[in-house]
Length: 151
Length: 292
Image (cartoon, rainbow over all chains, first blue to last red; front, side):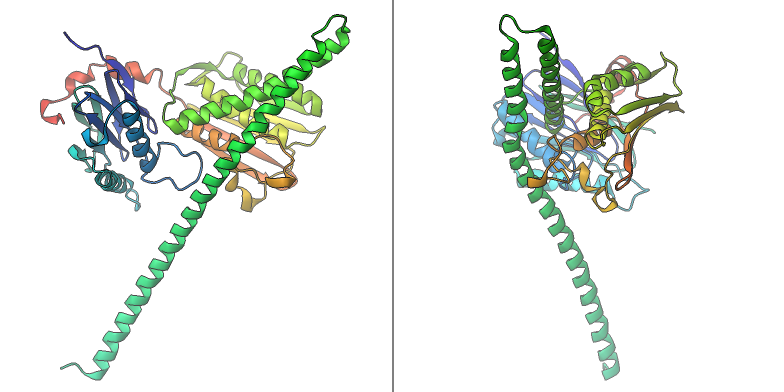
């Protein structure tokens, strides 16, 4: 029997975590996406953030890594996951040669440090470099397909 | 052997280096302190907001209930019914407006928003937004002028609901901060696949040094006991956040005492991002060695 997957396109600043199997597509430049997967329940969730930290301006939205990761973990726990069963894969954060701020690198660094703090192991990643990425995350199997974008 | 001069030079160098590091550290600490203050402020404004919201929702609701009861009996003159129903409409409108904003903010903060790009008749949309404020414009005797270079059915691809939220918030502010008997002008145009809409009022204006603060959530410049304007201070932070979703830009020109112009600029969106990605066979192009 094949599982029915719902298709979902994830916009920057959004996140999705569901008990229903999804195939989530998102396109990453300097942004970073954290995929969380619960091996025990076979469910997953993913975010897509633009900057590492919220600076208190505007809305406290998951455009910012600290909020995006907190909210994603929170949603996974709401869906019944135990934090010790969560595994992470991280993608994106290409380097932005035009900018001295190196947002891509900071986005990656933040995910790595923060996930380590939460004791969620990173079991797969493709980060940095000078190419954008498109990923397809299958939330029930935890599998992520990725390809580089040439633009 | 180190001579005394060399030693002094070396020490000088090290002192300088120390000073530089210390300066840098002070700068960083200042920055941290600033962000910390902002976060604290945002948190306290949030809890303030939660207690305020009770009034913001209860008051119009109580008015609606009271007004409705006052005409819900036999023998009420039709003139009174007319008048009261327009009051009920005004209260319900403001309640609806505020709730919509709160829901949008909640959606964005939860990361659960969706974008639905479609062809939107811009002129019709702007006229629709403007006419929903008719009753308030009449009450304050404000003349609203729409200047458009667009054809009646000219379309632009964007999320119509999001654009409505942006425009109604900007217009709502323009009206709220306008004096009675003044004028508001909406200008719109499409150039090179970019939509621009500006709203100009002759209201109180915003002093330059405060122009950054107005986008902070729950912040109103005249907050506190002297607060003389409606609302909960979410409007512009929502507008900014929605503009980010539309990959657009919101700018402000204002002179205190003379009025403000808010301008939104939005690039044309793609129709149905979703389908684009699932139907172009891209999934097949993923290589097995790029599986994680």
